[in-house]
Image 1 (cartoon, rainbow, N blue to C red):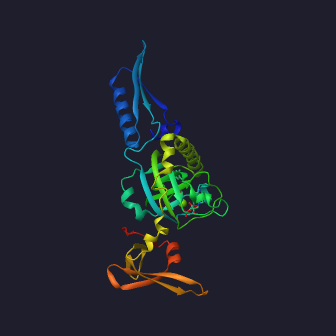
Image 2: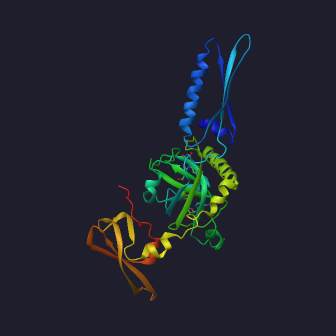
Image 3: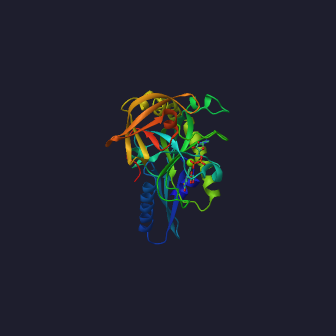
Length: 313
Ligand code: ADP
Ligand code: RBF
Ligand code: MG
């Protein structure tokens, strides 16, 4: 079924034919297996059985099973909204594949994605970033995205789940590591697959982008670009993240701890004579462990993430 969905456009029909040579229960068994496999491969998609019929001639008879692939690949439930800073990945997306992917920080959103099926999704995303070439306009508008959630089985780089967001129509762009990205996932395109070579994967990603682009032009999905969450204030830059008592987590231990709170503020002259705004962070489990950090440095340091979450073990 995953092979079929690779070949057939959304809404297309896949016809299975079973020749019956005397034993007419064989076709039924085969079709039951196909239906089961289709449902297992596409749990989020609404695959319907369009038609099942038999035809017979004097010498042999055959049955047909006709499965209709979903038109819109909608989520079973409501769309998924994710918010995370952009972290570093394997540096393969842009260089090897030609499709850069902004990797989300998985521990921050682990609870939300735990039961998400591995595969390719489409949606909208916004990143608070001013591209030198595109200026303000880049970060001001939500962008069409395709998102891969999975273990990248085509590469031998471990089995940790990554969430990679490719912004469509944004080529030769500048990097925006450390910025906060807000994503709304609207629908599912296909399960993640193991490709024999980079050429096959790249070809399939092109098709994913084609499908996503078409779906996002559909009024049903286009309207989600004004989603309040996607267009909301970026927490990493909001006052809230720097207020007294604001929670911060480190991905690697700092003074032996990962969960911190902001406890005080001060202004200090930096090395170049400019004034630095600093915040004091305290380990929540050991009040003696405190550290002063420059606010700008804190924003940029990917080891520090606003909010509390379970850090990777
Ligand atoms: P990594 O493995 O570190 O994620 P990639 O080769 O996948 O590296 O490149 C991703 C980075 O490229 C993103 O984090 C972002 O800073 C930048 N980038 C530039 N253009 C895009 C785009 N169209 N979509 C996603 N990221 C982009
Ligand atoms: N990797 C896979 O191994 N199998 C896939 O089916 C797959 N699909 C992807 C679809 C899209 C739209 C994107 C952007 C990436 C996909 N990847 C897939 C992930 C790809 O391997 C990854 O971005 C690079 O290896 C960089 O980490
Ligand atoms: Mg990437």
